[in-house]
Image 1: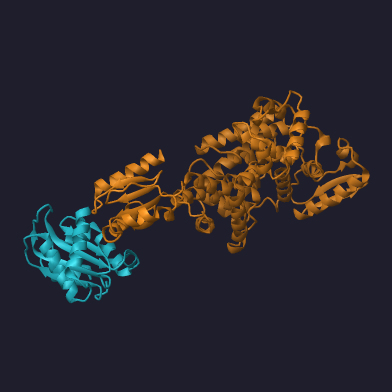
Image 2: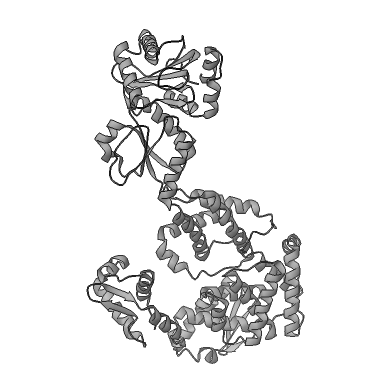
Length: 495
Length: 142
């Protein structure tokens, strides 16, 4: 089942919907005509081999047959003919990068893609630009293509190309492995064992997508050395002052990185250069872990500034968000993100599209802040859309948790004196309540509608409120017993 | 700092009832040219008390009146030389009497807000009723 963006959007809406939804409603949500909805539904169902993926009931609308959808999604044939031009170029570029500095025959590289000579020429020209952007050179001689350049640049290009394609767009290591058919089950088990060893040694769990990142790094490393194409360059293998400093600041991580690289060397029956320990260490300090690790870097100040920049710059639209918790949570993400920016490591966010459709305004805000942050803090690299997507999720989480503030009126016979005093006490005891006004009983009875929807009236005098409004009677002293009454009301309302 | 143009203090002798004391305070407000009619003002105060006691803290009463009989926003603080046990009321030591021509005039008055914010602090009200002289009370509130 191959879906275009519009059809996938339709499926995404139906996936979130538990009940039937009418074509009219779908057309509103997707901003398309009902005709387009009918056409897309028909097209989706026609491409399914197991029956209608979208079921229709007259008078009720459409609903997704989830079992069929999952079946169709998992049985779709991955055919090279279906690759888009970008995917095709990425795959060929990857093959060239893995093979660098040796050359490959153009006809062999393109034999499965069935494209014309003009298309190939165009691809080569675009791949050349890409290679140059990584400080590499794409050579084209006698119908053979090769890439040359320093090993760190080749790795960086491999990582970025993997991230750009859908190869890293995976939800688990298993999915990632499925896409790399050339990865043998021995290698797979060996690499997973290294990840487990890393987690055991550091007593932590590496969450998605960092586990995929580190797995792919080790996979690239193994592929490069196994083919015997890594040029042994003592100059490149020497640690710079900054690299030495990072190693010294993270002794435990450095030790584990050394052990794992040693094991990979033995597995490949070769000795890997010491710079490989450092490359792995870069990944280890650039991940988010399931718990806060002792502070290891001097970048903490920048991390704090960035977190404050995001939280202060974000417009919460008047919602009472738990800022302290958000700052703490976001800090755990930003800290490794700063390391990723410094080390040129990118993460793929396979949820980015969904985040964009679910939280479009929030994502736009975060992207804007990310762009401003790069200039303001002179960051070593741009904060990618994938990273902004992750950050958006933190804001979205806390916005979801924040309930709209409850609207309160404070009332006494005259709206003066005791009620004004109670207002001060209520605001002090319950800062999350929105005290709309202090009113006299008469004033409220005459102009109740002027105050809009009111959740609660805290009053020292008896009053019969409008529908849907609760009343808590208190004494003018607003004692602890009075505070407890209000607290109980809040608890009942929240539950 | 609360503006002395709005905040006044007086020492009160023992009386037989709260009404007597309210009248004494109303007379003082008339003398200060803040209220135009003693009886009309006292009537407003008593009617408000009848709707619910205005005790804002132990031993502190906050009677208040809103009406055209009031010429401008005023707070008159009466300190009872000896704590009083009037009928139907708990022991009273301090009376914070508020007078305002309209509710909105009171609600938008920063002087009122400053005083009420101070009186909303339990520590302040506890100290107020423990003072031995009007001078000490004044020092705490000004």
